[in-house]
Each structure stands twice: as C-alpha cells, then as structure tokens.
Amino acid sequence: AASDVYKRQCQNYMTTIETGFKYLEFDKNTEFEEDTTSKNYLLFFLKGDFTITCNQFHNRSFHAGEMILIPRSSRLKGIGENGSSLLSMFFDMPEGNCDKLILQSLSELCNNIEYDFSPIRIHYPLTPFLEVLTHCIKNGMSCAHLHTLMQREFFFLLRGFYEKREIATLLHPIIGKEIDFKDFVMRNHTKVDNIEQLISLSNLGRSRFFSLSLIHISEPTRHSLI
Image (cartoon, rainbow, N blue to C red; front, side, top):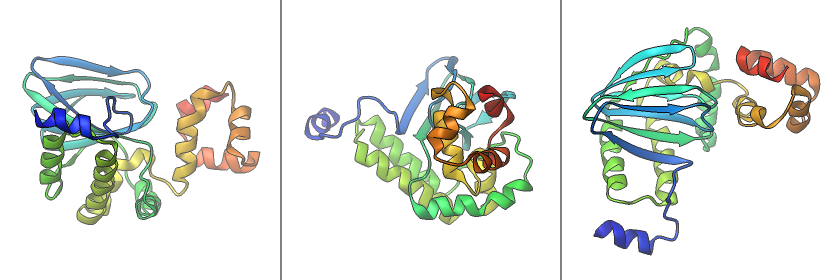
C-alpha cells in the first residue's frame, strides 16, 4: 500500500501523536476521557454529534462544522455518537511570532467576552484544509514535518480569514498579554510541590510573578499551589 511505502521512506514518521493532529472515527456511541490534558488541543467536529464535559462546563452538545478549544490541564469527558468523526490538534502554544502577537493583541477584547465554552463555525478556507489534512492522515502520512507545517498553516488561515472576535471566543483560555507566562505555569504547576518552587523555576521576582498570576491564572490552578 502507498501508506506502507511512505512509512518505510520517511525518517520522521510519527507512531504516536504528542504535538500534531489525530483523526478519530466512532462506529458506535463511544466515550473518551482525559483527566489532565498535557497539551492545549482543538477539536474539529467533522461529522455527527458529540457531548462534551470540560471542567465546569457539563454535557455541552457539539455538531459537525464546529470547533472548540480544550485548554491544557483540563478535565475532559466526551461521547462521540455512532457515525461521528473528529480531528484533534495538540499543541503547546502557536510558534510563530505573528500568531503570538495576535493573541496578545486580543487580550483586551477577551475582557469584554464572557467565556462560556461556545464553539465557532468551521468555514472556508478551513473546510478544504481539514479535508486535505484528514485525507493525508487516513492514508498514513504521519510525518512530524507535515504536522508542524499544517499547524502553522492552520494559525495562518485562522488569522487571515476569521474575525478577531471569533478568534478571541475560540482561544479565550490561552489569550493574554503574557501568554508565555501563562503557558509556563500551565506546563509546570503539576511538576512542583508549592508556589515557591514554581516562582524559582520561573526566574521572576515574587511581586512580578504574583501580579501576572492574578491576571492570567485561574483560581483552581492558583489554589492548587498554595
């Protein structure tokens, strides 16, 4: 098969997906669960219906043609109904400077949005982008370079063809003027025993660390360190 030839020829073939895309089909009503996600990830609902519980948002219904962000360290439970399919994108933070700048620029807009885990629609040109990506994955093209390239293209298309309010609604949990600090805390707070160790790891002064944490870090995460 062509996919087997590709696997033998590609030195960067990915046997597991830690950063990149994963395609899932459900041939019956199927539960899926994550206690604490180690990455941010986006769910692109391609076909059928889904019921998702994420942190304080319980039993939300999602449908084909929608996408939603699952932020790092979330508690996630979901059900994919019979005949449904989705594509998930695992990532730490957008790597491109332009993508980071647009997220930082949207922090003020986020202050005027009451986040309620609402999806946004998948529309052109993301629709054919996801179709091509799904076709590649289903045919065994799981090269690390492909996944990296397609992640960058996704953020490029999001930045270029979605309204700022749509982007702010989708990525609200990871947007802020100090997104690198927020990502640092979410990646490392489970690796330390207390907040003093986290401050030391951050190389920030105590006052600077606490001022940033009050702005950008959720109450449950702060309390877990105290």
